[in-house]
Image 1: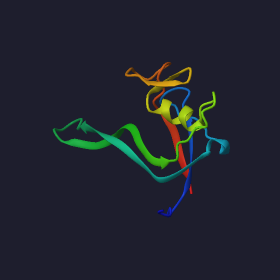
Image 2 (image 1 turned 120 degrees about the vertical axis):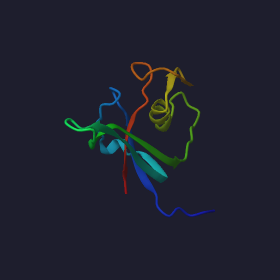
Image 3 (image 1 turned 90 degrees about the vertical axis):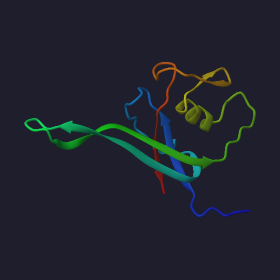
Length: 122
């Protein structure tokens, strides 16, 4: 069995409004994870010069990011889904109906919540 070099706690919560950050509390840091990697994907928007044919300094465009991690997924089979499923599956575009999560291919809004605000705690 391989020993973990570092174990961390991940705090995550589904955003109420997609694209609007949500405040995290200590109780939201309930996920034991490892191999956590959070990367920003910042797009720079080029701008043309005003009085010349040259370009001026670019400005930041859309703010995006990607979080990858590993966690142990378990469930005792009761009528209450585990918190990892209720948090991470909707963040990946799955919609819960009863006890079934189904993927949806529609724009984020009232039905699909694709963004989860995450942070890591060492």
